[in-house]
Image (tube, rainbow, N blue to C red; front, top):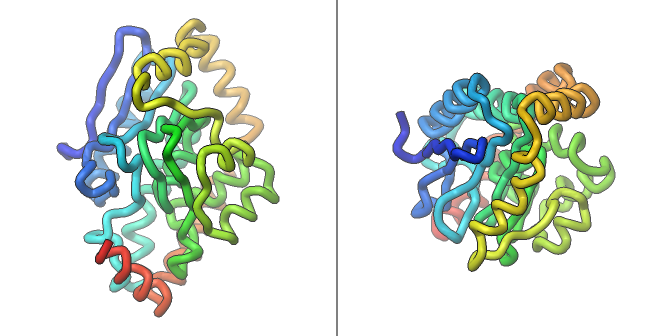
Length: 253
């Protein structure tokens, strides 16, 4: 069990998974990914009305993959083997039986945006920024989050976010449809209650019905193959000169 992934169940009827590695901007190691996926499977069998994904601290929701595990020296096959488990976890999260909410306590970059995109709804601390920055690193999304993005927002906006690979503030992210709203650091507990109230006021059968309806329309089983293809394409790009040079800069920061 990873000490960096926390699980809590609240009496109001929801569960919360917290990435608890603020000193590393909640970057996901391979061990954390394994634990995260295990918790998702266990949570499926609980009587929850909603599932919340968040990060510890105030700086970052998730910076993506831990560079100790996702370094540029991996071969294409090694990269695929490292990336694929999180693709599987994100696919399961996207089809989780009740509503899922990403609470971005801070900035989200790369894989952190992919994780948030796998959730049904996204709310971010007002000062947060988000960015599908993989294109600036010489690669593409590696966990299937790009394929998911096309299911969450208008396809042309998804294409724009991916190909421009730039940073968005919360106002811009709301305009794209990717972000549903903001939370205030000084009143975060109250804001979370307000966000969750519409879900928690329903009975479990209701929220499961609404989620199943949405999954049938927007998250088909065939999406898994599209996400697989994205992982494969990222793996083929892995370790190119631009990627190696970009990660040198990340290690220094």
